[in-house]
Each structure stands twice: as C-alpha cells, then as structure tokens.
Image 1 (cartoon, rainbow, N blue to C red):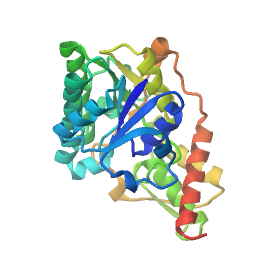
Image 2: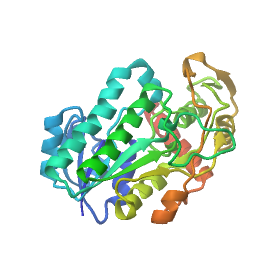
Image 3: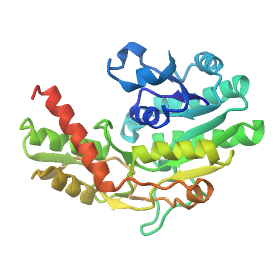
Image 4: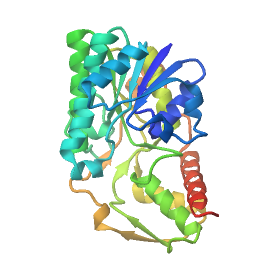
Length: 322
C-alpha cells in the first residue's frame, strides 16, 4: 500500500508513522524542510519520500500527489488551534478549507481511485448538551474560526465524494492527546507547567482557562488506529466520529495529572487563556465507527496522562540541562 500523509511533521503524523510504518510505503509532505526534523526522528528512516509543500499551493499539492501515486491519503495538515484561529481567522480558513480543496482537486486529477481520510474536528458540532453524546447526524454549529474552517472542509469532502466519486471518508475527531503534543493545547499545557514546577524552574502555580468545560480525551495512538481502520473498512462518502464516548471535566483531568506527577500547585484562572464562545460540553457517540470497523479505544486515560506528563518532564529537564 502506498500511503500519502499531509502534515506528517506534526504531532499526529509522528504517531501515524509509528503505527503504519511496518507494512506501508509512506510518502509524506509538510511545510517544514526535511532537514528540520531531528536527526533521530524515526519518521526519517520509515519514509519512502518526503516533499516540502504548502497545502495552500494548489500546484505544489498536485505535484505531491502525482509523485506519490497513493492508494490511501491521510490529510492531517491543518492550523489546529482554536485559540490561534481567533487571532488569525482568515489564515486558518485559507489553510484548513482552502488547503483541503487544493488536496481534493489534486486527488481528483492525479489519484482518483485513492481512499482519502479527511481528518476533521468535532469542534464543528459546536457545543453539545450536558449528559448527551453527539452522533454524526447532529447539525454542525461551529463557534470559532477553526471550527468553521473544519465544517467547510467536511462539506467539501462530502461534495467530492458525492459529485466526483472520490473515496473520501470524513472524520470528526474529538479531543485527543499523548506524548509529543505541544503545550498550546490544554492538557499538554498543564503537563508542561507541572513539569516545570517539578524541575524547580516555575513557581508552584498553574495558569488555566475554563476548567468547567466537559470534553473527552482520547489517546493519539488510538486515534491513528481509527484512521487506519477507516482507511481499510470505512464507507466512502460517510462521516465518522473518532471518540471515546466518555466526557471529563477539565478540572478533574488537571487534578489527575497533578496526582500522577506527585506535584502540589495553586491553580490560577488566567483570562488570557479563556476563549470567547468556548465549548461547554463536547462528547461523541462512537457507535457508527465501531459498527463499521470494529475500532474502539484501548489505552486507559491514566496511561495517556502518565505518558503525556513523562514526555513533558523529559523535555523540560533536557531543555534545562538537568
């Protein structure tokens, strides 16, 4: 199988290569140059090819798809931060919606028989109702520019499957974390701050946004397994929640991280970390993906949190020279 992964230099791309590396010929593309990868990055040894490319450049995407001649495409490239989208709404839409359009056009012209995993976001649903789980037939009601751009990508995927017969499978992926995630995301930011407190380079104070929001947090290693299951057994034209079905209050997750790390700290709400129109409750129903593919998450949440913290701790100590 020839696999093309956009956004392969990112957090999820790293784990996808780890999961799919054994029996796929992997071709990757991303904005950074190849020599920006760490020398010991395992992706370098497992990639059949890597092309630097800008997802917003239609010609570059056509060249990437033509060269890779993929059987499967996993589209990870995105501006993935809701907070950053509030600062840069036009750029977020250009990358996420415009980039997806460029890729789909390239696939239509150069690899029309490929299966396409168009990785979307559950943020497109907006906020759900407490005590309920969102299904794929729920309306999309995005509440920030990032969510809007992902809703547009979702619509493009549906259109290209129905109109042009492309094998597009859309995901609505709920929050996920794990080792290697950058601290611009909530749980990774908590882990980073706890690690800095543990290393003695930050006072015992954790700055947070809204801790009352309820979200689910899957493990990134389970999530890339879902993408593989959908590539193999998903129904083209359909959308699938990639989720655990279990919601957690952010405050409770922070408390679990602190307990796992054995760190005591004061929690301080920072208005700068609180988003306008924040999502209060976002939990999904995984019934459709389970019924179609048999996929279900297998990594316990405490292992995910432990691995996230240990990764942050190792990085902080390495950067501090300890």
